[in-house]
Length: 218
Image 1 (tube, rainbow, N blue to C red):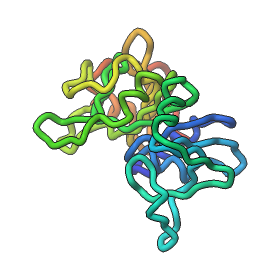
Image 2 (tube, one colour):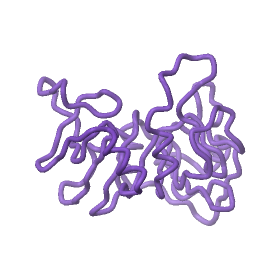
Image 3 (cartoon, one colour):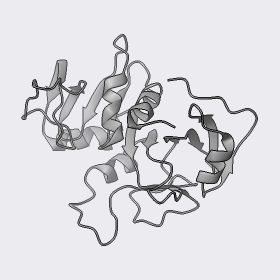
């Protein structure tokens, strides 16, 4: 199965030349390290940056240059810094082509829960609410199962929702799946060494398997 770096590497293959992309907190931030150098892609950080680069080399971090998750980042030549009002104006005006988010749960009809676990302290929903309400293309990077081995791809989310009917694609340590408009997870690819049967067992929501399912190419 894939580790977090492998999930990020596979998601990077979904990014197209000329895209403006927002990377959420967690696994999505790692995607910045795997965008091909010959591809013209602009990464947007909701705290007010266009032109985010890969993570800095150890010892070369600038504490004043951070992403929405407060991680130190780099800025590419030609990047721009602005206030969060302008940043969210870009998001709400649908200027961002692709949003990549982490999730605690995703339902078979594309609902996402990624901001709160009842009973645990939380600072707030953050920018995720605006991103899922405005983005036309959302890919989720997440673990297929929790630490207890229970599926996080469900018939319906059990945690408080961030957005409804918005997720288009999911990449986990086990598989790549589309969320179909009529509901259900369609299996597209399996992680190297992972069988279809293992993915079926790990998916609680409706899973559609058609034909031979290829292994991911990373």
